[in-house]
Length: 368
Image (tube, rainbow, N blue to C red):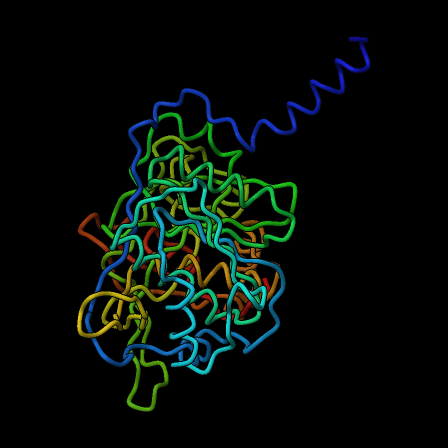
């Protein structure tokens, strides 16, 4: 092989490496959990906050979507397409099927087991991504299991596709020493925003929300007046957050200046309704008498923020922190200034500007 051909081969292999190579990382025991909480189950009709209500509360438009939203889940949900369209009929949303090219399911292996808990998570993610961005395409990528390797394989599949504008990861787990070596999996040659739930156990950082290439989504509690208008939005007690053990603070956070971060990545970046008491209706086929659930958790925020990216195509970590530092930050975020997620004083309390419970706040626009 001549010198030029060798050089081309080296360049080709280097460009493909991030899309399929994990290495012998010490996260071999990593197993993700989906932070979902069931508030009501086995109902015969939907209850909870509706798509129209949440769009009004967060100033989200009815339409304007572009591209494809990728939902990364584990195990197979065999009834997801049917469930999605029962959900759509209940809330007068457009049909989203394989036939009309709105919905696509990609199994990472031919044979994948089912799991009831993950199927409910999948229903939440797919149904509510579609509810917020009803004309965007939905790609459901089903990892064989929730192991770190299998989930990264699913992410790599999604991020290699040029039609993807956002990747939603409604799951997480404990940080590990080698996580910094995996940050390249949350990058793309295309304009993709990666979103991950920050966790539902209060104070403490989780991966992949801790990656500086991922938008970590924390949780809030919504209280509504009798007419459906907003009474208050406060920090949700379960919202995950904290300071990464291993990830250094990225430039967008350094420029913003986050107190007490000690040069490390602060989590979360943004927030969204997560309290099960102000939860979301989800349809999931089951053997029970009723198939409607009301669920909450920070897992609800990741797919809906991914839908916001589809609506505005401007959601990025750099934009978020610049917007919050501007004089008119209230047009971008609702600053969550009360509530807490634990007893660790400063780190567990919501406050003005940035806090380790709700980040920069909840959305007030799709344009950042």
